[in-house]
Image (cartoon, rainbow over all chains, first blue to last red; front, side):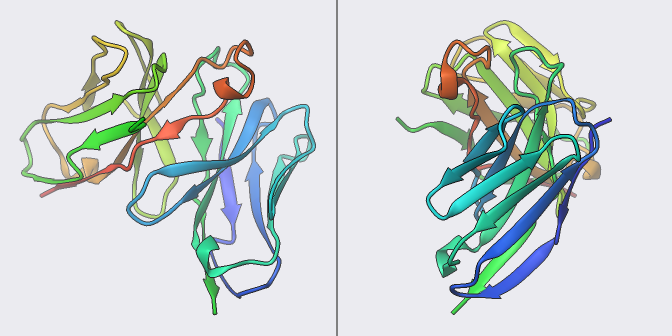
Length: 115
Length: 119
């Protein structure tokens, strides 16, 4: 059974700092991995999606990497801003789910960026 | 487009009561999903649907039922509410991820959630 772990569970950094969020998964048979952002009381917003054949994806100040063989992904946030404060979730999609994206989620990292 | 909408936003139920959580999407997505998120935990898949009239169980289906009579709507029914069903429920939708739609087929769009408290 796939298990997804995110470390740390919570993180507080001063504005402007670069930071790394970690995600590990136990079964390397994945189709893709996604990073989501969740704001309090809101739904999830997809940030980056990495296909199993890819090594990394970038969007603005965000860069996500994937090492499928070791079961790890990192989300790098450059020059953090207070608006980045949210919970960040990673999710993997197994290879054996047909065309439905039956995702397995990690427990999330709650990020606070202080002034 | 409104995207994925969910009602109600918050509900308190007594043990043994029943209710239906509503989910509607206006993006003409074939696929729809229901997740629950317990405090401090990740989301777990309850049920999903690949099209009208087709539903299937996810990881934690016990205590829930779904139906999909239209492309737009995917209601989740709790028949006999239990305290263990206290959670935040998220509905999501997507295109089928069969490679034919490129990036559009890969992302799920989430609703704002329904917070349910069973006492």
